[in-house]
Amino acid sequence: LAQNVAMHNEWGLPTHLPNNDICGICIEPPLLPHDAQNRHQHTSAVGTIALFGRGSVDLHKINSWLASILWPDQDEADKVLRARLEEDLSSTHRGGMHAKNDQPSDKKQKIYRVKGILSVGHAVDQVGKVIPDSQEWVNDGLAAGLVNPDGGLDKRRFIVQAVNDLWDVLPASQNLCWDSNETRCCKMVVIGKWLHEGELQEGFQRCFNIAV
Image (cartoon, rainbow, N blue to C red):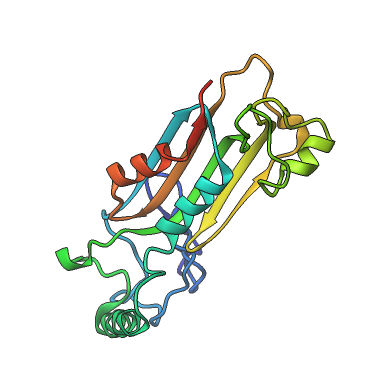
């Protein structure tokens, strides 16, 4: 009897779930029949990159950067995207979306998951006062005493969660706030295929706006 056991990769994530369940890396169900030849699987092209920086980030910049890496084709013409989709569907029927032998032409970055913890600094005016309504979480933070009106630092840790092209950046519970003497930093982990580490690092660093 076949056992209901998932295979895992080096990060402990399932690379294939039995009985046609959702893939634990890309959150996609298998598109082909569940058999030995056309199993939904990932290759060594799938990797993980850790991003780190000291200081605090601007939420507008973080969201713009996430949009740029999760929606890389948002500005392409519809006919170009349609042609690419048809090509992807054609390759799927020929041998599976995640075939073992990826060709060099397939080396376009594809991000499956992003997770992270951020220190946030909100926008300030010319004299260093936080600008009300400049960010989604500014006004409620000011009212609760969680945002410093001088300098704009937010006491709350912000959590980043992204799956494929959907993401959220939300404050964690107040019992996880930054201590006053704690070094502010931001950490993110990106899991995907053909990841461009240099570009991801540069884009992440451009989101910082307040030094420790």
